[in-house]
Image (cartoon, rainbow, N blue to C red):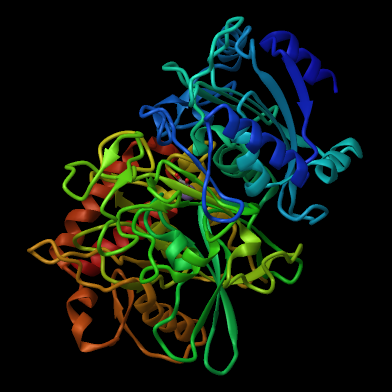
Length: 571
Ligand code: OXD
Ligand code: MN
């Protein structure tokens, strides 16, 4: 592979390893990392612990660039740099950046190898942490390389932590660099990521390829690459429906995807928790796959109460990053147990006790665990044709206004639900937490092209003969005046899903409101969550208008008309 030679000549690593994806390879790298103290073997079977540099704990949205010939192609919500200019900067940054390190070449597949919906990638990295995470998160190694050698197209990712080692220099436990750049080239399907080892920045298969680059491919080829979980829901009669649900980062996708239903006879099974690739088949059915092979989940808040399946998922073969370490070589995080252990080592490596005034685990600490260990894995999770999606859910973290659940009256209104998604920011990205921001389709950090064109793409998917899924919006996060959550969430969310399921079957009535269809009643305790705050909504519409004006004349007229209709209905 000529490009490997070229990248080697640019980055000047000491050694090149072509990864085969084997268990032995995983063992060899983890052993080497344990020896050099960048990884700690845990008491849990086959599990490890990594601690990052305190400044490399989340996605760096400010450092993400989309490089296209025409600036209009990326729109006002992305950072644009001309390809030649970015390549010049990258060549300076990457020159000699792997000195003293090993350069790993990782061939991988997103999706089951051979699936008509699978796509291939090669990530070149100097981070062994990235290699062991890619082992879990993707289908990597010989089989993927075979497909590429047979001629399958692939996305090339070049990644460096950006910290060359001088002769004889001892490495730090988490090498990274203050200067970070994550540059995407949709035309050539290339990603160059420099300076960070954090998952969302460094595991190129995930956000960079499966969302940013894939969204541009989906636009060109008529499919969808979405920041969505995929779940199966079975009712007491044994009828199953699949839903895809879009929530911003760290808003409970993993919990919803593995939910333990509180309603007898209703069951949830998991296909994926973060990304969905979806395409209408010849019968007009929307088919979805989870392109990932692992979960890169947020640890804090995960417990036997909130997500018992996730707790079982991570019992073995899991990499934990930035959680707290217990004295007996296990892990802990806020929310795992009601009472914290008497003594821990925190995510920064300092001694910690319940009297400490700091968090033991970083709020964006993570677990990386294999999909096939999920105890509620759907029996069609690896179906190469994908599962049929009948419902699409949009949800944000909003303490006010947004009712518990609303059903869109038609596809167009549903697209407006997605476009108008706003949510309070979380620790998944660097920056302030808890600030309300527009996050259309939960894709603000992940859409690889002009968001207004993305809205048009969604609108264009509705075609005669297609079985369009029903679209819903939900909000589990409404609070009362005292700041207490009004809805119990977690396993109780099944009551909302049941309503959606039965709406799809046209079995339950609904209140017809300007903002969509609402449940007549779910149960008296939630009445407050099912009323429409007319004035609040009118104000919200103004804010949406203002936000959409950012896109100027690129904004699809249909969505603006939909907004006008809603406003008229509320006045
Ligand atoms: C993730 C994210 O890691 O959205 O999934 O940040
Ligand atoms: Mn995500």
